[in-house]
Amino acid sequence: MQQGVVDLPDIPAHDAGTVEIPFVRSALQSGWDYWLNLDFTLAFDTLWADRGHEIANAQFLVAARTSDEQSAVQVGAQLHCHTEGTSLVIEGPELEIHFNTAYGQLTSWISEGVQLIEKGPQLTFWRATTDNDRGFGTTSVAQWRSLGLHQLTHRIASVDWESIDRGRAVKVVVAARIAPPIKAWGIACMYV
Image 1 (cartoon, rainbow, N blue to C red):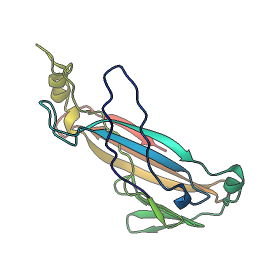
Image 2 (image 1 turned 45 degrees about the vertical axis):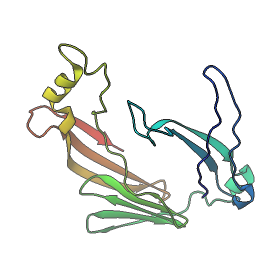
Image 3 (image 1 turned 90 degrees about the vertical axis):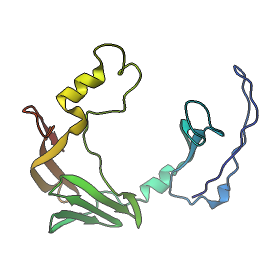
């Protein structure tokens, strides 16, 4: 909605300061939650990172919808489901969700005309390594790579769905196997 860059004043180490974050409160519409997202980035190049590198971030609730506004939202509306090729489409008042049944993944969630999600989450066991992981001698990274954790792929065994709660909810169950492509081991998992 609103964005900008705020230059921070010089604040000595072990000291505190106050920074005013300018935004127009009158631009906020009722019925929505509004959050202030702060990203702290380097203002100049250093030996360990370039200018613009994110050092920290924070999020604060600025305005929340009231309980009166929440009760105006239609609760328990009837949902309609149908398939379009490899997509399960779930529709309701001011709501449209697409779920890819070939990949077992949420691909779109639109609420009140606003795209909330463009791609759903996917389970992984790999993360960025740290200095501790790359230590001396036998390293965690070497062990992880030998197990193939950096190459995990998903194989979807099945995607089933059913309308529940008298049509007011849809339950999607994905059975999958996550494994590296050249190893015999894998992890069977079920997403609901």
